[in-house]
Image (cartoon, rainbow, N blue to C red; front, side):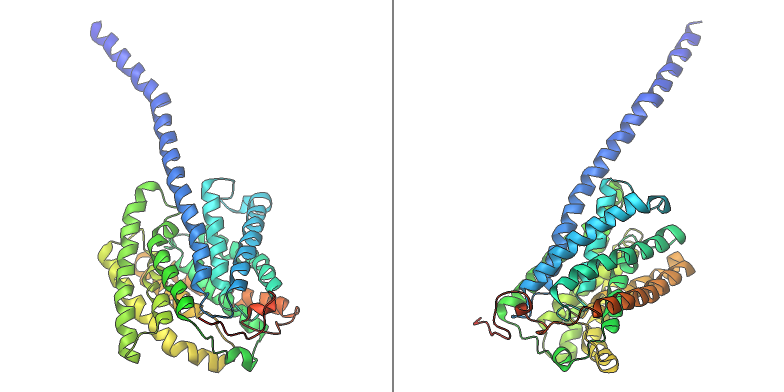
Length: 387
C-alpha cells in the first residue's frame, strides 16, 4: 500500500512538472532567445550605417550617401512592416510575419539589403529617387523572401548569401540597366579620394567584419549563435589573407578600396553554410571568396562596364554578387538541386524586378551633377577638398 502511494505521489509530481516546469523552461528559453536577438538586431542597424561609410570614399560625394541611407532605411523598414504584418501575413508561415523580435530582425536585414543594392546606382540618381527606389525595393524583396523560404523547401541560406547579397547586387544591376545611364560623366567619373575618405572605408570594413556574425545569425536560436559566429570568423580570416595575396600578385601593390571590400568576401560567401559547416570548411570558403572578389574588381568590373555601357558605382557585384553566387554553389552538395533553383531565381528575378524599378525611376530624370553633394546641398559643384 505504501509503495502504491509513493507511485501515485511520483506520478502527481511528474504531471505537475509537465504542466508547470516545462512551460517555464520554454518561456525562459524564449526570453533568452529574444534577448540575444535584441543585441543582434541593434548590431545590424549599426552595420547598416557602416555600409554607408564604406561607400563614402569619393571626396565630393559623401553627405548625399548618408542622407540616402537614412531615408532609405526609414521608407523601406516602415513599408516592409506594414505590408508583411497588415497585408501579406497569411502568406508567410516560415518567416516571421507578426510583431516580434524576429520580425524586426528580418526587417532590418531587408533594409540593409536595399542599402547594399543602392550602391550600384549610387551617384547616378537624384536625391529623392533613393527614397522612391527604397519603396519599390520592398515588394521585390518580399517576393524573393517568399519564394526562397515559403515556396521552396530545403534551401541553405541562413546567412543570406542568396537572399541578401546576390539579390542586392542583381536588383541593383537591374536598376542601372533600366536607367540606361550611359553618360561619359558617369562612366569616366574619376572618383578621387583622400587619405581621410579612404580612412572611413578602412574603419567601416573592419567594424563590419567584427559585427558580421550578428547579421548571419539574427534568426537563429541562441544555442546556434556561437558555432555560427566562429565559422563565420574563420571564413573572414580566409578572405583577409587571399584578398591581400591576390591583389598584390596582380598589381604589385594593394589598392585599399579593393582590399577593404574583398576582405569581406568570405563573410558574404559563408552565409549559405554558416550554421552547417565547421571552421575549416568555412576557412576554405573564405580563401576562395577572397580570390574571386579581387579578380572581380580587377577584371570583371571593367569588362561589364565596357560591354553594358553602365557603371556599378560601388562595385557591388564584385563583393556581393559573385561571392553570393559562390556561396550558393558551394552549398549545393548539402542542399541539392533546390539551391540551384534559389540561385537562378535570385539572379533572374533580381535583374527583372530591378530593371522595372529602374525604368520607373528613369522618368524622374537624372542629376545635373553625378557623384556630387552639390546635387542637393548648398555646395559648389566639382569642388576640391583641401585634404
